[in-house]
Length: 381
Length: 253
Image (cartoon, rainbow over all chains, first blue to last red; front, side, top):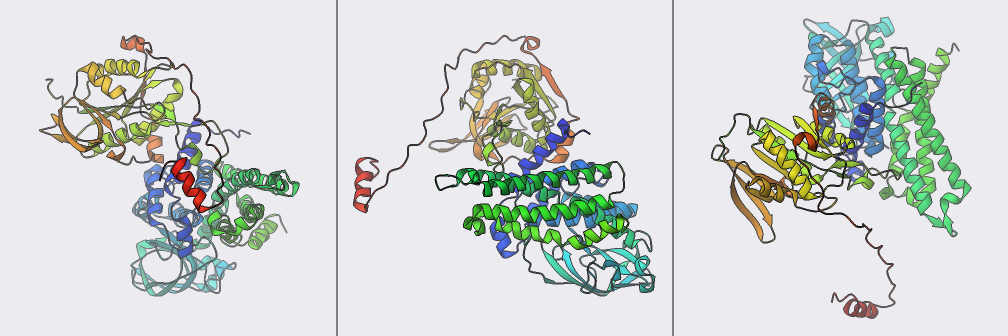
């Protein structure tokens, strides 16, 4: 087993760290407070090459293998403190770029991927509905063929990037009676008639990532925006979710590493009762736990990405990585606050935000409970 | 004066220095300081790129003097958009005059249209190489430049210089040496596509011997020491005492 990065990978990771720490960390506290999406930082990330990491060069990406991609995203999470921006980027990469890349026609790929990679286009994904969350394939949004168009009707909730998206991957059913096999996907552009991006949703964390409720009222989508094959929608969704589960928390591993380092520094500098608080075993133990979590989380992340790079199935590994990393992230944030005492609770110390940002990771891309049931079923239970 | 060639080449000498912002990188734990391109030289590279982007140059050559580790900064220059890089392989601690003499030989070989470089390096703050180079080549120079425009079919450059008295605008004949000040531009960051492209661009390694130049430093550093640590502050008990101290000890009132 080779755990060493090549010189080229190291150079790439260093470049990501430098870029992110210098270009993305402004107004983070204010933008979190006011729920502001940093569009400028988004464009910078596109120009720098983040969104296109796993996309082949012929479609405007960098053609990186999955392991290099997650390592780059991990470094991004280490150096960039705007978790909301990173969440938006991840949603865009795994639930908009991946379906287009895997299932798009040549024309769709040529039309959308370069813009989705270079930061000029923002993608989103509309799957969850008010009455269909964990039970995703019970969705009620309908699509009906009418001439050379499809007509969509229904409503979607928790649409990440909804308020700012140029194009949405929308799931709907052509025939509810066929269950998962009736589900199909469409590329819906923002100005499509009948598409209504309604209220922006306020939320606990990742507040700099805009989210909306979206309605389709006789929304007409041209035939050429049908994504993939008829009846393959559920497969497409599962593929996209597996990518997302395996990769979306790469930046969380970077965030944990940063929390670990800043907590060590704090524990060494902060003195009480005549010594550094890090000398107290109750504080040291928390830091040791943080270290164990970040290391185990990183190994699960890399292993899953490595398997994918070897073209192996990663359903279990992706679900386990998602479950484990999200759990570790929340606990690391709690410890980071506890180590800092009252200071950790203060906004300006920037760890309370990290906790609020982390909690969503146990919900999105399948709740922790859904990951567990997935793992259990794949273990034959 | 030499006739302008059809290929309009900009040569940018740059130096590798310890990263002045190293501690700022996300509060990372202590590690050996990373090296980066001298920030003023980065500004020079950026200006060369902008000149090429507006169609006033066709080739940018980056030149550095140093040990093999400096290839990393050469790669960074290529990643920013420099077309090719040359490293003069020399691991000695050279002084400005030695560097200027090496660069002179290389410039005579490369015959650039203009040389743009940082006004000084942030590690030793010498601020000499550009001026010495102009002297050795017998070329005009514009130092501390915050704006560059080409005039008269690119036979002259109009440069705005930042001086203590204000801005000075001068016109110089080309070829010339231009040294850059902080306000000339804000350098772009290295992008991942740039980094990937950089691996396909050449870094030519030359030695002083190959260039036919023998240099030895005329200055030797006897010792270096850190600045003294800031002394602890004192507490005052009253406003009166504070004012008295500011008057008598600090002498700021």
